[in-house]
Length: 366
Image (tube, rainbow, N blue to C red; front, side, top):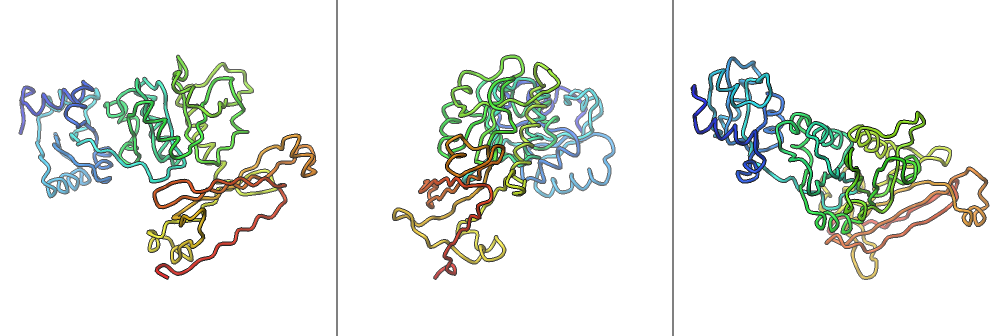
């Protein structure tokens, strides 16, 4: 049992808790509490050291047993040593030093989140939690953001860091990523831009939220394709950044899960899968591959989605659409095996138009 706060292991834990530079140099960080340690270990992250004090319940004992079988260094410590090593005022009785790991961004993401100038640890931590719950595929942290692996951020995130790619990148890297994957960047701003209810959140996108005090950085503003604002009929000047982020994150979810009803809402449709997923996708798509060729390429995968919006004056005249009725937009993208965009098409039609796709399938290996 470790009984001295001067023990080198305890000193190392304290340094990781208090200094971002130490976390960066050591490529490790500290998580505290049974639930967070379970989340990290269950997600496959490697623990370098575990400290515990007092009696653990059955869950805690089972966790220690699993870590011991992995060969993790486990040390019992006295209560006053745990007090010294812990960041919270009330120690949880168990903490772990985890090795940093970068989860990969999906091959073709269609939903990313960019918290610009997010410097408050508590609010910053709640955003990965909201992002993970909303199905965001990557959180991209620009320069100047708070350390995502600081103790307060990790506690507020409630384990989201272990299931979601959270990447600290330069603006040039972020720009290349969103442009390569053709993500439409929506910048949320107070009383600037289109109402968020009118934005086309069904397309592949990156949602950018600026800081509460300063708003978005110059680089963030330059990256934006469109600006959106949350409508506030109550007359408030602005919203807490974490609250605004949660509203918009789940507005994307709502819009993508909507069904086409009365020609006014929309649905997200994914209809192509790479042949490598043949055993993983049930039904016909899991036993087939696309044989269509576009410009000499064999499409490896693709995506289709439908959205709706008010018509322009020219579209209203062309389609004979009455005032207040929407038009339907059918979007289609096709990709080669190296993720090169082979084709992007957008079909505009009356909301009551029936759109039919016809694909030719052959059994895999044919």
